[in-house]
Image (cartoon, rainbow, N blue to C red; front, side):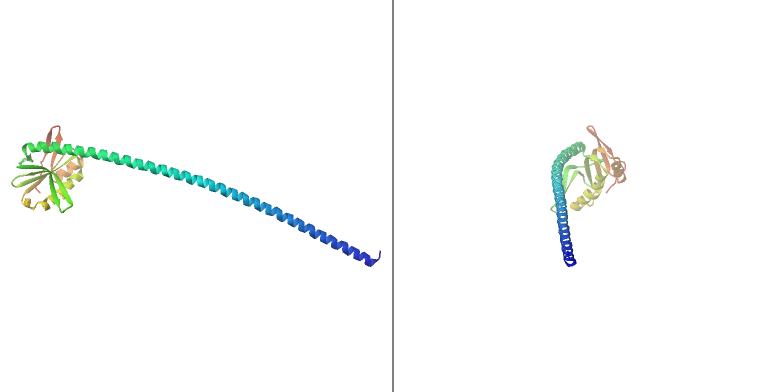
Length: 228
């Protein structure tokens, strides 16, 4: 074979070889791209499945939380109703006890109309004190004679606040509502079935007579009585 033909043959073979190599490279690249695309699709499917799973779990948790919240709301409502009923019953018992104390002390005082050694001409129960249209206060017991007024507050259990209320609220309102008693001496009393220790001290320090119920009788402690 001549050299010219030989060179041409060799060139053709080289070109075919290069072409084949390029085609093989392209094929390998296409396969690699298909493989990577498949892997990405698999990863996307996996992430989507995990996201759907999390969404389902979140929905279940939300549903459970909502159900628990509703149960708690119902329980709190029931508890609130129960507490209100108990408070109403306790309040009713307290009111009944207060009424019993008031009735007992009033009935005993009514017999001779005497308090702190002072004889009174008249005794009233639940005496109204009206200031304006909406302000109404009642004095549990009011006793009056020609120059002296006695105001007595009665509780089932007397506490320190009851002393302060008698002095700073009820006495003040009585004076404003009934100026006709401005020149009268006023003595104060506090009565009940039982007394908190601080209430006894407060009453004594302020010169307020103490009335304690003992069975069907009352005990009066009026050693330090004060004229208001």
